[in-house]
Length: 58
Image (cartoon, rainbow, N blue to C red):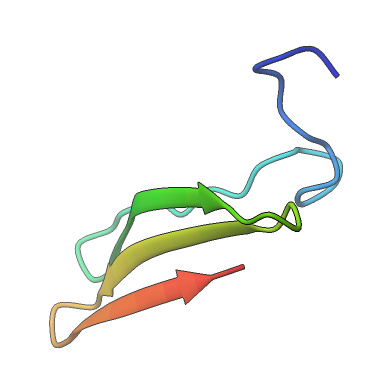
């Protein structure tokens, strides 16, 4: 892979996953880190106009 290119092993064959904001649901990532074992950690928030939740995913 070339530096900066999308990794097709994430959500094959696209290399990315997109969450669209709507009036009812708003998701956003705010921090990204790569662990020593190569796993990617993403921190973000999800909001459904009733609750706002903290989300951490590998």
